[in-house]
Amino acid sequence: MTSRLPGFYTLPVEERMRIISNLCDFSAEEDRVFEPGGGLAMDQADKMIENALGVFTLPIGIATNFQINQCDYVIPMVVEEPSIVASASNVARIVRKAGGFTAQASQRRMVGQVQVVNCPDSAQSRTRLMNRKQDLLELANQAQPKMKARGGGALDLDVRILNQESPGSWPDMLVVQVAVDTRDAMGANVIDTMMEAIAPAVEKISGGAVYLRILSNYTDQCLAQARCAVPAALLATETLPGEEVRDRIIAAYGFAESDVYRAVTHNKGIMNGIDAVAVATGNDWRAIEAGAHAYAARNGGYRSMTQWGIGPNGELTGSLELPMPAATVGGSIAVNPSARTALKILKVSDAAELAQVMVAVGLAQNLAALRALVTDGIQKGHMALHARARTPAPSESHDQRYTPTRRPKLMEMRRL
Ligand code: MEV
Image (cartoon, rainbow, N blue to C red; front, side, top):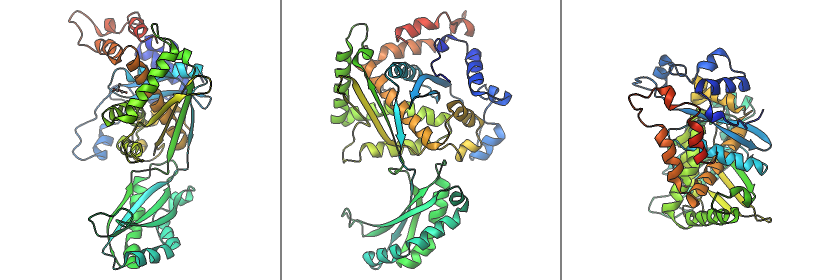
């Protein structure tokens, strides 16, 4: 399968859907899933949240051209900001000429926490808990036997004494911290159930009182990385040589490394792409956001999530590493046919592969934003696309506004 779909943007929506349907071998139901009323049904929505009024719609688009670890991916993105899909596709087209993105994912260990207060002696309580580590892990796994049967489950346990680690104004408290392999699920419910299951034993062993029993969204043992190396010539614009664009991109990275006002915006641009894939695939984008921003501040200051530099042959090198608790099963994916269909488009075999795709999209989105910012400025592309979404003149029908013949002009402006 190729993700290089030249002229895809010029086609009517129905034709684009037909191409994706053929590529992904859609069923009749999947063919209709992104049509109004075709996705999440009213009764499903009503069971999902309290006080449901209906379903809320957003556009789903396809980022083309992506090549990651030598495999092509067409990438579903749900987002309202006009330029995100176009700019990701544009940069992916450039990067594929340079061999595409490489990506990898670490082990998948999520973290659960049990807070223990009022221990008579923190150090002794810690020792007692650590001595019963295997019993506590077994209790956690008994609470979620299916996870163990799938090859995951609670793997390791540590006990931290807070405030001895970082002295503050709070009295000492213990945190029992459990590492859980949640396989292809994000695992929030699994971990919360496990933490609640071990809490009575933790109280008894420690002699303290358990308050919070909850997963942590700081998933720094579930990382994914993406890299790219782009010959400078591929970055050239009509007015600027590639070396100049490369150096300006690196200076833009330096700006984000040095200034929190810039770093937040820089990182927001990265999350534009990651969130759009997360929403499309039914993932918990708030968890991904929270973990990503905390990771950007892991060395004490809030920094750029990406790193940009010059490789041995003068190429622009980029990398992005983030906690990526992506899931391909469980949660809303189980009930939302749109999310399941988006995952089918991606053709990822597991959550680790999805995590790799998501960081590669984040890296592409950052390169797209920086390249635009250091050359034409962001407004040129933005405004062209905003103009397309304008209110139709009374005499102009939907079909007239969206004719294939008009689209190339807009796309040419962005050199797609
Ligand atoms: C807009 O949604 C994202 C950008 O502001 C990101 C950036 O400034 O790097 C363009």
